[in-house]
Amino acid sequence: MRKFYVLLLVSLLVYGSAIADEGMWLPSLISKMNISEMQQMGFELTAEDIYSINQSSLKDAVVALDHGSCTAELVSKDGLLLTNHHCGFGEIQSHSSVEHDYLTDGFWAMSRDEELPNPGKTVSFLVRVEDVTDKVLADVTDEMSEAQRSEKIDVVSSQLEREARKDTHYESYVRSFFNSNKYYLFVLETFRDIRLVGAPPQALGKFGGDTDNWMWPRHTNDFSMFRVYCSPDGKPADYS
Image (tube, rainbow, N blue to C red):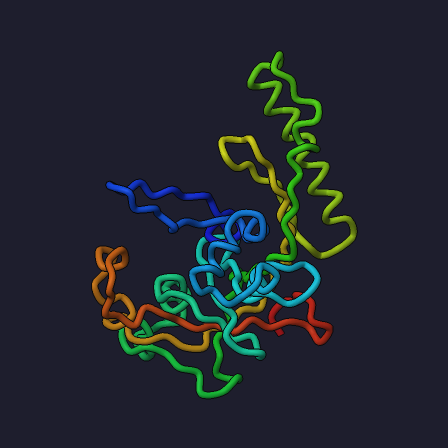
């Protein structure tokens, strides 16, 4: 969740007159911050293609695993998810045994019936992001102590979260950005029936270890695959 919902603005300082164009932004701010520059550099999508609350967009294909411990990408209309090997490591390990050492040998489900359930694992989709800075800071004054300020912000944030959830099955939370100068409300839809589909042997999936994880280019099969299931009406449901 933090990796794609809570994206921070990153500046890269370089020597000379070179200008750094790298960075990460809140997806809802793409249209205001840098979509024109991206398109001038050859980017062919629109801001609506990246983030939209009224139509399908890239935000609907990128998910948070386990409330933010990892990210994954939806790569098929049947709920197939692609993520890193270490993001599925715990599940691969939990299904392994002396007879079936999936960490060492890898695992591949040849049919839906062979996909392995993972109690407790979740996949969260971003429904929308809303700038609630004015609401959160409406009654905050310079005369307040830090404790008073934090208490007021917490009370208002909790109220906004409850209003966003109402009687839906969504999750919601308010988070601060830019040294607590901006506050954003995130609304999520979390699915609970997540099944392991496949993973390469650990020797390939974790080749190079944590050191190579931060190097480029990498020579590794660093991936694992899951599938997210829902109820017939498309809503989250327990394993069935």
